[in-house]
Image (cartoon, rainbow, N blue to C red; front, side):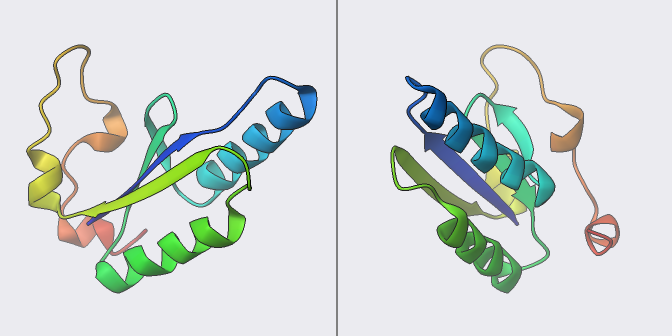
Length: 102
C-alpha cells in the first residue's frame, strides 16, 4: 500500500514559508518521498499502517492551505501513467519482503 499526500500551503510570507518547510521536513523524516512538487508518497505494509500514518499527518497538518491524503494499493499505484518525465528510484516496484523492513 501507499499513502499519498497532496498539499498546497501558502508561501507568501516568511512565517508561511517556515510552516511549509516544517511540514515538508516532517514528511521527509516520517519516510515519505517526493513524487512531484507538493505530492509525497510513503510505502505502508498494510491498511492499518497506512491509517496510522494518515493520523500522524492529521496531527502535524498546519492550519492554512489544503492537505489531502489518498491510500492506494500496490496494484492501483502501478496503474499510474507517466505522461512526462520518468519514475523516480523510490517509486520502482518493491517486494513484500523488502516492505517489511520499512
